[in-house]
Length: 343
Image (cartoon, rainbow, N blue to C red; front, top):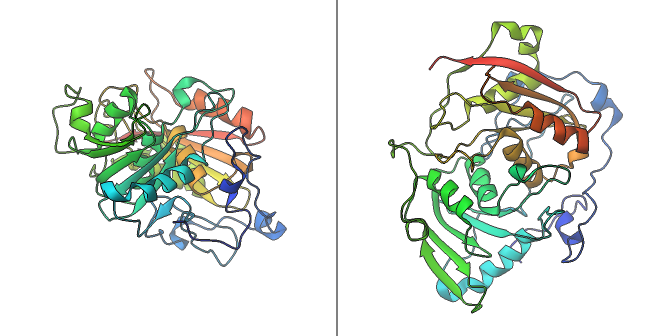
């Protein structure tokens, strides 16, 4: 195995996955009652975790910084070579076992190798009661997780099957058209190596080829004056930080940040990762789902949510998030806080 063992039974819910059935959602030990009654501390009281783009906030006097579970992040993975694909096949199986696919039952496994050498295991996410548009593809999961860990780019991608057209277009936003891609041929059963440019020879791209998803600068997003007292709340500030980390080269102004607080006080965030082709864009809900799955946070443990976004007649992320909460965390309220951008 290439995954560190853990003594916490709630962490490794991957073992409950089977080929024929979806497991129960992982459960964590009930939080201390004192944690739920303690006031939220200001953002300045918490350091940023060095390996995460998210602000991890806890209630109480002794916050602890928890990295992403080792089951989806491997710091020293095996060497990626044609004669060593058996090791990566095991990693793909581990990744696919985390699939949340109640609609299709199709489980995807992906492993992205970041420039740092770290491997990011990824899978697909489907929302029961949701729409096809809310689906997170395995390759998208891998890119979003690598970006959350401050990778500067990807060295290679290994997937259980040849990437679909949707993913090929989204992968262009990594800024590496020659990205090596390894996949298992479903007909021959043999591993094949190709690259993104071969898979998508005539891509739809924007003029600025120097800026990509992994090197885009923070956006100058500020809360609107009408945000009132919500501006000072830690959850709003976390959503604002997430909004500034959005990547929006196509629309320039369709950024947004989503922050949810879990029952134990932890805050998890998501933002926008745009595609030049528009539809492969990842919404704040989709990137939030990636982070929740990676951190193994049960969706029903969401206590409240804040969306920081511009007021626009052309687009809105609110309805998608409200539908998700109504299905999976019906007691969690959503607050929408208006914001503006100076650019």
